[in-house]
Length: 137
Image 1 (cartoon, rainbow, N blue to C red):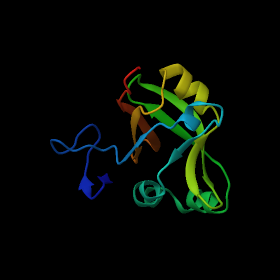
Image 2 (tube, helix red, strand yellow):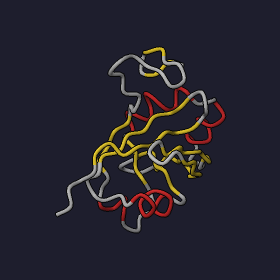
Image 3 (cartoon, rainbow, N blue to C red):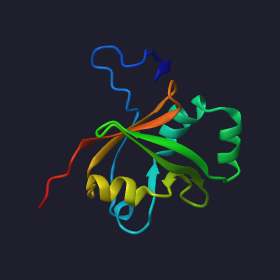
Image 4 (tube, rainbow, N blue to C red):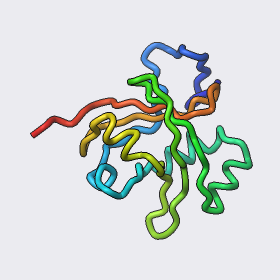
């Protein structure tokens, strides 16, 4: 599999190579009621969509939701969410569905926790992990 220009075999990678090509801090709106995790547009366009089949990309482009599997690398558990592209002034890509229940509540995510994601081309799923937890004040 090629990931960010590097050849990566299942469970391997160059020393120091970090496959989590999308990194972001959790915002207050992502843990309270909005029910979605917004992903950086550039990261999705560069690292996710090029690895998807044309049918899924086409569905996303016309505003449809696509069911995706998200593997929680921290707990080694599989979760089902929906992935979509929000349109409008601040067009973005998001995970929706059971985001609050499956990730925020279950993992105790807080504002400013840093997460990492990548698309696992071998298993056809997103891989999710907490990189840094925000300090509790």
